[in-house]
Image (cartoon, rainbow, N blue to C red; front, side, top):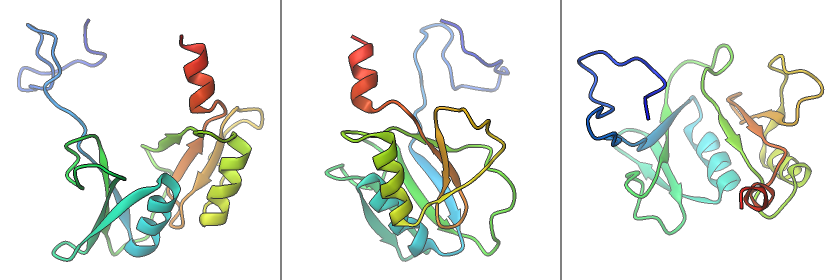
Length: 154
């Protein structure tokens, strides 16, 4: 299996001899002016635990029951303070999938938590819904639930 990108001789992300991955995503960082508000939104949206970082002024989020906020058991999210407001469309965003609910129920729940509907230029007939967190960071709620995807992948 070949990587989907071209790596220079100095990149050690992919071992071409063994085909093994030598790096994992540990933490996704979200910049925020109001760290508490954004961290509370994402913790509630994902059902994750939150750990304030008094040294950095941020908040780390990780799935409930994980070994902690380090990202060892899977990616975690760090919400970090920045002085400036978000400007422009995100170049990277989350695609969320409803788990045990429908897309419409999940969108309603996220809106009640403080998300807003946004238009990033998507066509009106797309199957996903584009929302933004309280500071305008876009994310999508996909049409098919976790259970629907699992049922079709068997």
